[in-house]
Amino acid sequence: MVIQIPKETSPRPFLKWAGGKSKLIQQYIPYFPNNYKNYYEPFLGGGAVFFYLQPNKAILTDINAELINTYCCVRDNVNELILLLKEHKERHNRDYYYTIRNNSAGTDLEKAARFIYLNKTCFNGLYRVNSQGNFNVPLGRYKNPNICPEDLLRKASKALYKSDIKQQNFLDVGNYATNSDDFIYFDPPYYPISKTSYFTAYSKYCFAEKQQIQLRELFAKLAERGVKVMLSNSDCEFIRKLYSNFNIYTVSATRAINSNAKKRGNITEVLITSY
Ligand SMILES: C[S@@+](CC[C@H](N)C(=O)[O-])C[C@H]1O[C@@H](n2cnc3c(N)ncnc32)[C@H](O)[C@@H]1O
Image (cartoon, rainbow, N blue to C red):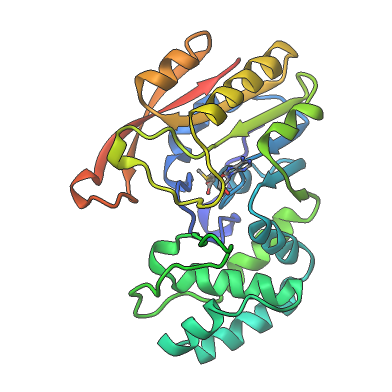
């Protein structure tokens, strides 16, 4: 069931996230299924679709452990998290950013506050780690970054209240989504549309052709069980061929993240459904 709620009162993503779907939701609305009981989002990222749908029962997963820890802290300890973020906000400057960036120690709550602080102040809200797993995105150029979006965090906390949130590979969703009561929205790292467009925004977790094919196999297996499956990806021959047995809709998007400024602009993407 798709619920329409006025924007100012509705929860929204509290993170900037590469590939975030906030701007595409309006085009997705006609394709969300009407009836389902359990919602699964295995490539959670900023969670734009989850926050829009606000399902009663949700299982939210992502392979990024720091991201998942942050969601758990927003759900379980939003007041303490806000206090820590206010501290970051007060102390924020260039040197402080690099001090925090280079020190990943702390409690889960401190790590979540650090994650949000870096997300709001780093270049384009990117998440990238080096081979040792250390966050290495430089400081962004924001005059007044919104380091502690208190209202957004409180709304997100309420929306997440009943959700099951865990770190997982996307393949695991195949173990528990079993029938037509289940709706899964897959938003994987996109298949690159050209050699130069390959952008490793999600860093150490490689998502190449092999994973795209595994995802297609999983999509087909779930669809066969009657699970309602929806997936976003880039609009290219490889993806269109891979999902040629399913419904493929074209949506238009603006490409915000591309290392080549000339390649930013309007493009099309696909939205695929099994139902
Ligand atoms: C396109 S983003 C999702 C964006 C999200 N829908 C939003 O609105 O912000 C893709 C996500 O997939 C996650 N990811 C990458 N490889 C994965 C894997 N093998 N299993 C699960 N999640 C993975 C990344 O950490 C990233 O958060």
